[in-house]
Length: 416
Image (cartoon, rainbow, N blue to C red; front, side, top):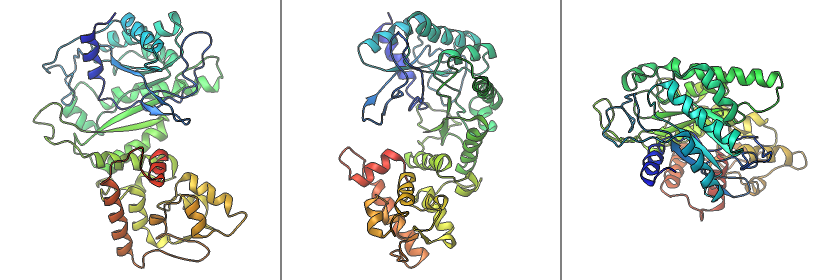
């Protein structure tokens, strides 16, 4: 059994990885323990309101790499510990039986060599699946430069795998993570994408990485602009079919002359997540959201900023506008747009109807008409001032369980 000291060190070392919000796995229970199917995993809320969690731990924090931003880097003065595959498997089962967790997020520093580390990771998940018949969700972090056969074997047992891009450019990787390269990170991601595609086309029995792949980028540790980050994000979705790209605002947990002394703002990270949402669900392209050499504005969300740059397209009439255009109206989210399409088949919509549909009229009213009526500001400058004032007011309040219904719904669905 793993002792308390090693458990504390290994779980503490894993906390900076954020690429694990939900599973999307379809792994069902077929006679063992656990179930990765009905609700996913990680620290998140399911549609029925339950909070679910997972054991998030490193196999080892003893690393041969010297990434400048990493608290487990080679020259860091920290206690070094490791756990065996048997200890991690035993701990996972013990926590599951006690109802502490519903799955496992397993990562590791590069201990010994990439192949040695990856082999131990594979042995851990294989032990859980085959010997202990554990069917809960498993998210496995891949090790760059490990052999392709090990990557393929891992994907047979994990629900999701991820290789962290870490930094948005090859130049920054060479400067801050010299043992890593863009190709060493993208190559296994391409391999898994291709093998998953072939597996589905051939309709083989069993599961092969049912919850897909994710990745993570550190924001603010290197000088790349948001426009470049958003374009990389778009490319990962289009070319590698990633489920999610996560952003982690840089926190100076270690000090180095090559790293900023101040943390990146949480608002900066938030704007990138909003842009990511627009790419995935609203039909926007990276080119529409920000020029490659510019950052996203901090005083406005990306959707409002785009609308203000394209005021010639507004206002649109909600009773006639197509879905694609409704989704580009600030304050109208995906669910609201669908409600509008359905309701206008039977009646002529008014602003009162839109309010009942939970359209955020304090933003939307500047960009729409309903039955020919317009209640927005009378100039572009006035619209900008009202929107930025609204953003400042919203950002000043910490969201809680007791927030108003409109704010809580927007936070839950991600609607902009």
